Image (cartoon, rainbow, N blue to C red; front, top):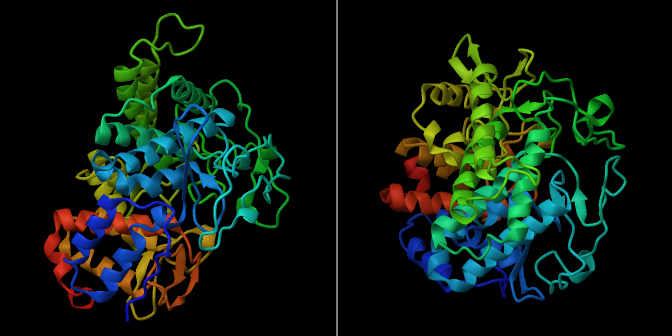
Length: 476
């Protein structure tokens, strides 16, 4: 029986997205897979986007994660990403994404160290949708008591390097898809300059920088050691990230997948600056260096440091990327399901696709040698989890990412079969599930995972269309 999880009235409806839904649904033979596609791909537009035009008539978009009524820079970027290929065919969809780029710039200017932001006072309250109603859209938040510089409008202030990379990726992708330069205004430039300055400050070459964070909590991964500065590091050119994309505290301060993400993001930003702000100075008191040159120099420095300090020789898998390092030679060997992850490297930067180091790293990640790789007793399910949800939960996001970074049709089919069987009877993706009891899942409304699943099906329709005509169970 099909389970339609779409609301009677969507937050935002796009004719081209609806047409794409129908077109690809007609290619999918497996009923469970078809219903997952129909529910998941439009989930962000159906339930989590709120659009208006501001007092200057410019697009302004707020995007919640789902069951948490706040905007994460990472999640919001990832949630709208799979709609970018169609933005040039739908002016209203393009405006929706442009509005998010503008809103993210405002968030970064408010606090470049915050990972999530509360519903803004100047934004209209939403009408009732799913589990969110106007009573929930306020400035209150459970983290206002954190021991850090909490500014009004910040929902959570966990410094995560990827939180500044994702808005750059979205702006670059939007420009490539639409050639619309309207988002590249003085506010966006100021936000990008602040983002780059923040990354450089967190190289911690001269001092520990301005960021401190502790939380009164019994949950170890929700706070930082050493009076809120994180564990010691040796300045080697890498950028410290105190928290992971999971919002869990890093153990070693240099988070490798986020630094690799920063390299490609900084180069994308430089290319945008070349076009839209070719003479923008790096700082107000600069001697002629442009911001684009500063971005490329920082990207080169981080890339060099990564090759010197973030690759290790594993006794079984050869040279692989470590997950975290500290510059002293210590390395943490694992992967986490949240993106950026080591598994996701070719998804974020195609230059990793055919490298021996990534191939070795991938074999390690998808094995029991990765302490956060789990499988069910009957071997039906296998995938990467996260300390965020404890052992032994598997994240559908990791299975989706395994398929998105694979060129093996059989592996992709196995991933589709696992995804179909792990929905817990809801016809939606979730944050995590117990491998021996998929109905035991966390976060019933997690728009990033839903839309990422839609992106996977779009990718398969383009690259391996015959797989959609094969029932998932038979393919596995």
